[in-house]
Amino acid sequence: MKVKIFSDGSSRVNPGVSGYGTILVYGEYRKELSGGFKLSTNNRMELFGVIAGLEALKKENLEIEITSDSKYVVDSINKGWLFNWEKQNFKDRKNADLWIRFLVEYRKHKIKMIWIKGHNEHPENERCDVLATTESGKNISLLKIDEGI
Image (cartoon, rainbow, N blue to C red; front, top):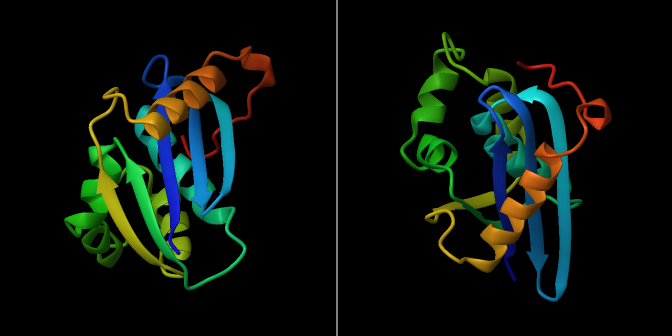
């Protein structure tokens, strides 16, 4: 059985108050994760949501499908850009801290990245959007600081 991860990110202003929402599905098991930051970007939240899902897994060598509406995240992996950035030590690349963190988790599993169009009535993507926008709508004093920005 595959683990399915669905993720979305949100930033009210870019950069600005931001959030992510993630859903993990394994058979009948379903878990929702979300979080927000005082100041971050939409791309960071899109990537952070994927990382949060991967870091929540307790086992390694899993077959995982990650579904995201972020071309930034999905294309960076599927088109191999990320691995070229890594070879260049992420020189002049934004979000290097998160990409490095992602790669640690990525290499523990067999991952397939799937892009879907956002706001297209995909149930999990819509729920992730609600989780992300709810986080980005919280009182700023309740949110963490995104150290990478």
